[in-house]
Image (cartoon, rainbow, N blue to C red; front, top):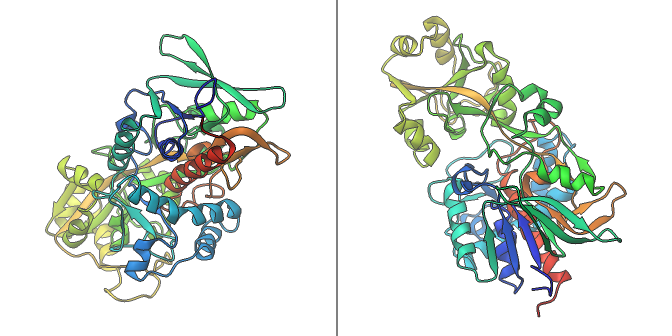
Amino acid sequence: MTLDGPDLVVAGAGGGLVAALRAARQGRQVLVVEASEHFRKGNNTAISTAMIPGVGSRWQQVAGVEDSVERFVGDVRAKTKGEGDLALAAALARTSAPMLEWMADDLGFPLSLVTDFQYPGHSALRCHTLEGRHGSVLLDLLVRAVEAEELIDLLVPARLVDVLVDDEGAVRGVIVASPDGTTEEIPTGSVLLATNGYAGDAELVAQHLPEIASAHYHGSETSRGDALRIGTELGAAAAYLDAYQGHAALSRHASTLVGWATVMHGGVVVNTSGERFGDETSGYSEFAPLLAGQPEGEGWILIDQEIHQRCLAFTDYVHCVEAGAVVWADSIGELATKTRLPADALGGEIEALPAQGVEAADRFGRTSFDHRIEAPFAAIRIVPALFHSQGGLVVDGAARVLREDGSPITGLYASGGAANGISGHGAGGYLAGNGLLPALGLAYLAADDVVARTRTT
């Protein structure tokens, strides 16, 4: 601990908790400031599917999966059409396996490699998760570890509203506001902005993400662009502010994520006219604005019993089932009646699906049909959603926030949605895990840089 205050202040009790734990386990005093008293259930880490890409991990090695930093960067390059931050993608890829193995060995998290299906854009099985495949499990483990750590103080609810710098531009403290409006200045030499992006601010969304502005926002109410405001006021550069993670599979009935495993296992999406309108396997993020542009701005996912059984591994999907969001029918006619979709169009789309094992592209260019759906059918009504913005403060491979001239603001770091991320522009560059990897990975990198800059007393 410094003579004046904590060695590190972390703003945001989501993925940023990795930084708190990483720094504390190396003898540094940490203060975590969190704005929402309901953060355990409502922040973006908690509502994620807990999919964390790891490159070259021991779980991949056991499963015989060949992967590399170069391969991951190649996937990011392909998904973002060469417009993503490839240097940052490489830095995150290099730290991903050590971070995951530290989480397993030092924190005791029971991680495993997902091998039953592959998300769009990943050329190797590299998503690691926890039982239930839900972010609430991940966040609960992080919070429990933080509460057990003597060198970490958790201040909730309180909002970090400003970062103070000295005459040389280095961080010297923060201003924290309580719900009653009182403020306190806390001295520190290091701050991690882990407050997510700006998707909870309607004006910023309309400015930067107009194509998805009318969609349902499915993220934390505290994601209001605090990091973007604080950083830019200090002269930080910002980039990729038009990048975001959308999702085309939010249950209209349950307001819960249905999950794109439904599609990757062979399901299809139709609009309210009963017609397919694109290659669903291109990715759930870019499919969100496509769905938003359909009549009535909503649609249905069509699956069957086999796909249903496979998706029960996901807590979110189980919640949809329990909420009554899944409609079952023994025939196309019955399905049309229950969904009020045109029977002819619906039947035509199902009949047009290729036979199982056929890899020829359909009229939308889709070649991946893991399974051909058959009766009894199931349908889930869906609406497009905005999950979080993917652009933010420009950071380097140590999570240090950079000025317009490329120089770092000493002591200031950003992670997750507060940083510029690796998704390029728009919705199409998002790969599964592009939210959690920068959230956890940049936090991990920031903590190691703080440790290197400070000494314990």
